[in-house]
Length: 104
Image (cartoon, rainbow, N blue to C red):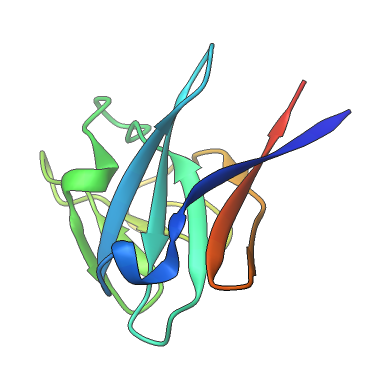
């Protein structure tokens, strides 16, 4: 079963910035790209657990603030030569509001 959670109005998330949503089990980074697309991934880098929401967004990737691992916001895959992935979450925008899908 899924549950859509209101994150914030789109304009409250800065372009190339993020907001953090905390659920019972996980912290999720919700990112707004330059073209207003919204993506959400586990907020912990798969390398050393760095807070991805504090990293630098460029294109459709995030660079971890700890060791600059580059992670795709589209599919959660780490850019070579590093290896790994992080969980992705569905998002949507309705009437200017960003929503995040959490699984029950």
